[in-house]
Length: 149
Image 1 (cartoon, rainbow, N blue to C red):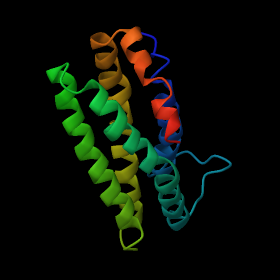
Image 2: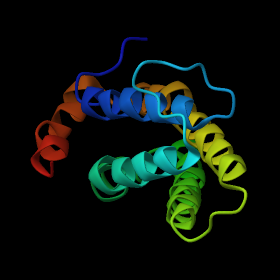
Image 3: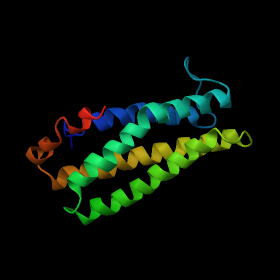
Image 4: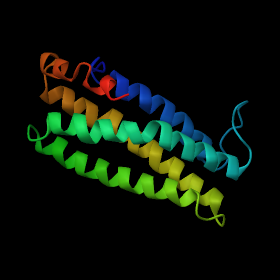
């Protein structure tokens, strides 16, 4: 099923976050812009969280969820998991700046969680939302997500 154009801004965010998730993983393939140092990876993760993920999570929690809440038990249950993962991602990112021991393992865990979280939203949440809401209904989201950016 093609992605609704009203959810595409969130999918674009997911694309950028997947790049970060890959970079954080242990034994990630080295690319030109991939830092080698775990400390540099942690710094980039903190920066990305503050500049992108905080806003993205707020859009999902304060715009998307209130919009879809109550129409599908499956979607509501999935959002409970997603909100729990948002909290865990936040804790993991904040923990990167507090400790230096086991940094590579923490980065790897964060990369795996972030990738899994994004895949859940793209492969489960968005298709379920699109199955419950018509494109006309989703059009009411138009501009609301972009407006907070």
